Length: 57
Image 1 (cartoon, one colour):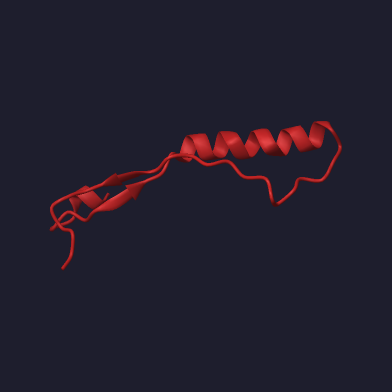
Image 2: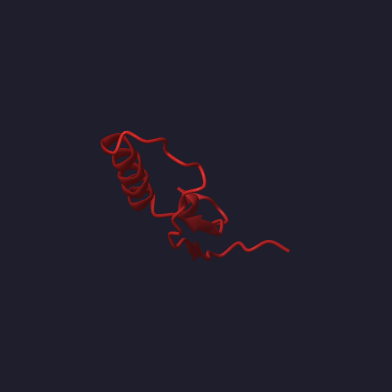
């Protein structure tokens, strides 16, 4: 959507499908083992900076 704006805005692209897949994996593992899901569990997924014509300043 940001590339349709004038000027095109720089944005961060996040892997939405991978985020959902990892969250579902953690959830289902907890449900199958009948244990609480720890809020301290984390997974780092790479985001991508999409630089377009408008960078501010």
